[in-house]
Amino acid sequence: MPKPTPKKGGQARRKGPAPHSKGRPNPPQKGRSAPAKEGRQELPTQVLTCTRLDSRGRGLCLCRGREIAVAGLLPGEVAEVALSRRFGEYIGEVRALKKAALLRQKPPCPYADRCGGCQLLQLQYEGQLAEKGARAEALLGRFGPVEPILPAPDPLGYRCKAHLAAGRDRGGRPVTGIYQEHSHRLVPVKHCLLHHPLADRIIATVRELMKPFQIAPFDEDTGEGFLRHILVRVGQQTGEAMVVLVAAYTLFPGQGGFVRALRERHPEIKTVVLNVNNRETSAVLGEYEKVLYGPGFIEDALCGMRFRISPRSFFQVNPRQTERLYTAAVEMAGLTGSESVVDAYCGIGTIGLLAAGRAKQVLGIERNRDAVRDAVGNARKNGVKNARFVAADAGEYLVRMAEDGQRADVVFMDPARAGSTPDFLEALAAIAPAKIVYISCNPKTQQRDVDALCRTGYRVSRIQPVDMFPQTAHLETICLLSKTDIKQHIEVEVKIDKLDLTAAKNKIYL
Ligand SMILES: C[S@@+](CC[C@H](N)C(=O)[O-])C[C@H]1O[C@@H](n2cnc3c(N)ncnc32)[C@H](O)[C@@H]1O
Image 1 (cartoon, rainbow, N blue to C red):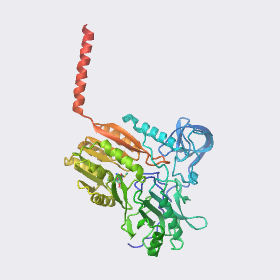
Image 2 (cartoon, protein in one colour; image 1 turned 90 degrees about the horizontal axis):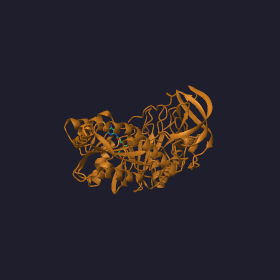
Image 3 (cartoon, protein in one colour; image 1 turned 180 degrees about the vertical axis):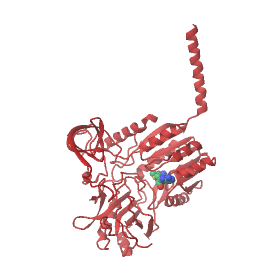
Image 4 (spheres, protein in one colour; image 1 turned 180 degrees about the horizontal axis):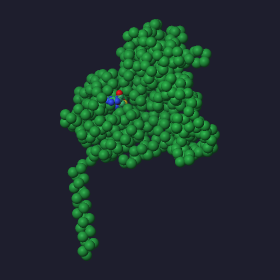
């Protein structure tokens, strides 16, 4: 691959759970966004009371009939808030806290006020769970009772995937960090409370090796430099580590010595991959990859099965809690061994492969070809013979299945934050599985999709929130939908009508 002309732009932000959009929103693109002060109108300071949190963990306060988001404020708290209006949106910033919530704590992180990645760090874990439970209730409660949220066993140090951006400090020394929300200011981070400690240790070594190996951090303003981001994934159970160096171009002089030095310091490293991203988008990873060392993937274990994970494949960032999520999802499906199962948006095949032992056959559908290759390998590795995987858009594939008259008894669906599509949902209704297990990292889009499914003859029988991302505002929920039995429903109605009529007649004629 030729060395491309370095371009301006590109962002490194921790996007919560995945590069597949589970996470906090991307910042505005450099060069396209207006300077912070432009379009900003300062308004008089007000004393406001926070009533609830929004989906980004900001406190919402009622002010002259409109809800205003105030970062860092918790429900029940009263604060003096500086108000401003930017591009039509009202924004509040806490000037002085007048009444603190009972469960407020001093954030145990030195970067808390600048990073913004952990929106709920100022709230004790017990309070975080209560808030997330309340949000699940508010969004999904109208479909049925919401079960208590499943707490995470490790509220800190659970992220087995870490990615930090490379940059320079004021003295020109290489640093790695996280971009401040909606800005291009890099907050240097040496140790993140959420990261697996090995991931932070490896990133620190990469940072140290940058100078001796003459690896220049990429500079967005000049378009010069090489290294944009460092991504490390650690297998929670296997202890294997994968290092992905995201660079602006392919040419990496001294790569052999660099990889050797890195491995000498961290024998846990099983593979090192160079990923080239020369696009002006907010995506961290580019399309081109070159394996510098090892097989190009690592393995981890979940629920007694082993899974290979490639750099661009989705894999939940909190594996210990993922075991609880998947166990709950597979149990909800109530499989008996005779079912045809579809695992839509299947990633590396985790859910489908765990379900395969209790089903007749499994079909996994996934758009990312690397993930499908992993899924096929994972089936083989775990001796699963009744599962197959296709690389396709889930909506398009399901439409074809519906047109061909193919059936499924149970459909697991686990789309990215944007949720599913009308095509997918329409085809799903036509295929009419008895059960749909919908796993979501965005209960707002899940609410929309579940609503659509309920209008096609499904009812929600279980709702289970799971805390996959402690300290952040992100919420994962599982909804079990069952097909209503229309025939039986009508018969019951007729019987009630008869009874009512008799009672009415009696009233009239006696
Ligand atoms: C939230 S992840 C879930 C993956 C998997 N179920 C798991 O638990 O690891 C969503 C997956 O959907 C895939 N995806 C996104 N849009 C898709 C589409 N239109 N068709 C098929 N797969 C899609 C992504 O590549 C990603 O692997």
